[in-house]
Length: 270
Image 1 (tube, rainbow, N blue to C red):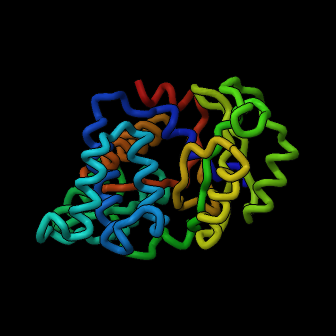
Image 2 (image 1 turned 135 degrees about the horizontal axis):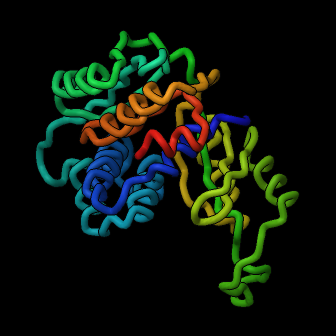
């Protein structure tokens, strides 16, 4: 699945500083509300809710905020504006396909904000389906490629050692994985393990049961074809578009099908 994590890598390299944590809290809280509303408000019996809570804890969201979001989604805090899941599609500079997922209580406001973001960066918001066919949704389990040193129960230590890749592959296959990619990040090497939507929960639990350090579980739109961006003006416009969209409170995820050389991306982010 080479190249499928390209945009995920770009997002890591231009990750936000702590100043935007408030926006991260808002986005994840909305995920929790929707998950609690769509299933039982108990993470033990609601995989979507459990995944959202794990994401919230990884982002440093206080437990009180998490519990409040669950209560809000389950209706324990009274009536609340219903959040609606909507997908938007469009084209960025140079014809790059952009897929956007939003949770909003006012679709007119959200559409207007997205349309402005596209128009200010040389792109345009399109009709539903105009680029969606270029993407496929997969389940993704992110695993840190270190794990507690070998041992059983109380004998397990806090030391870390590189994982055995053959054993890891066997565990992935046992959990129903389709493929995985090894990625170097600022905090070390990780594996992104891809599977079908229906198998995501099984894969995640299998890897956890075998003591692998699962750091994130999510659904992700993956481009089936990519477009190489070499024009500096297009690169700057695209990265500005992605940043603008991700800054909008209603936007949950933004995915694009472009690839860009690291040096061009670094230049464009200046």
